[in-house]
Length: 247
Ligand SMILES: Cc1cc2nc3c(=O)[nH]c(=O)nc-3n(C[C@H](O)[C@H](O)[C@H](O)COP(=O)(O)O)c2cc1C
Image (cartoon, rainbow, N blue to C red):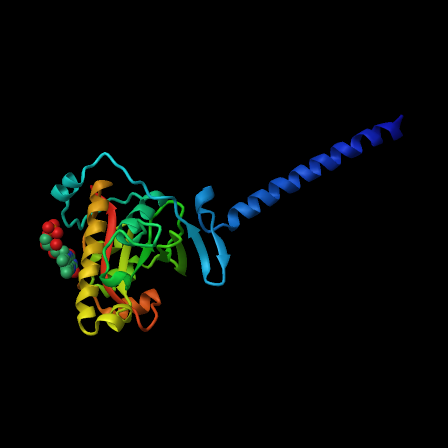
């Protein structure tokens, strides 16, 4: 009789042990992820670092272009609220995302040379750990290049314009001038600066349409920003655009 009981208990004990093991594995794998568990943002590691696939941008909203133009202002005051991953993706897409299967972008570029790059310095965004990320327009994804909240150091590098540390994120537009000057010579420098203006205005209008505030900051120490972001030698920072919700 006792033998029979033992026979019955063995499968139950094994099942319970397997279940506990599964629960432990689930918890451990959940904690390992530095970024949220949304399917579309599931990070993975390759040779370059942690990569985050961004949600597809939205191509419609309840705010007309005319209203965005009318309401756009430089905003230097933000709430403590986070931005969602969808909103971060939308801002980056507006700045430099692709809008055509040939790889053409939301911002115009002389000769389609695309000398601009967009980074996002994340402090308070849902599903993104604080850090510095580089935006890849063709893949619409982010690669984390540095971990940790760098907003305060970015503000210091920008002549202590403290509001930069208070935006949920800051988009940093940089340029590789050679991409344009190789074709257009010295005049290419002018083109690159014009392009930064186009991209920044796109961020302004997109932020306004999402009820967020931003300001295009041009006053900063180039070398300090470049070194903080770990930018390659041939790249120059042009604009810092902190973004946050408006009070
Ligand atoms: C090239 C450029 C550089 C700027 N740099 C800064 C800056 O370093 N700090 C800042 O607070 N605002 C900066 N601004 C924002 C202007 O101060 C702002 O656009 C101006 O006051 C007009 O206000 P509005 O944008 O609300 O129309 C800059 C704007 C431009 C176009």
